[in-house]
Image (cartoon, rainbow over the protein chains, first blue to last red):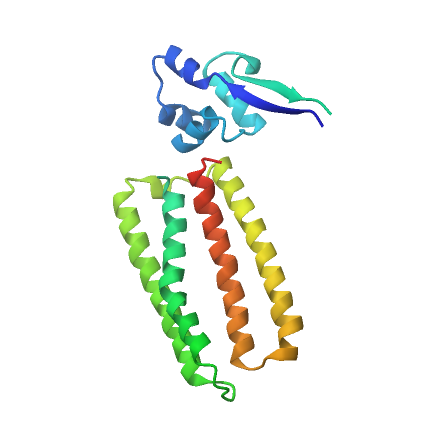
Length: 74
Length: 140
């Protein structure tokens, strides 16, 4: 299986959205502030639906929020 | 700290306060008495009552200081954390129940078996709540 990791630009996108707070973003996509913090830190991979909602909030395509990089291949 | 993490640690604390002394006393007092042993039953009832009191007081306090966090419904991460913790606790419960139900009847009897079954349930619940607490700590 291809190994890899998911990175995201949520912190940067929040900054460009007028320093939107984690709580506000969480409220808009239906998760808690702590969940947004965990996603930003790369500790939690959101569901596809939550990922699409985040992209929708920032009005950008999904691949501008999340990216996946392979670390090794077997 | 998320409200759900606080309640998980509270549940763990309540179990430690109530069942720590109970199982300590139970392990020291191994005299065989005919069932139902009302003395031991009373001790167990006292432990459960203590647990309920600690939980009720703790929940009341946490709701008071949580500023509305208590009414926020669980999100997908909360549900995922809960699911993982329950899965881990389930393995503890099944392994313990196999031990109590299939192995202990050959070596023990009476309240020893009852207490072992209770210990397995408490251990499974402890793993459940600890799993929730540590998952939130790790932000997982």
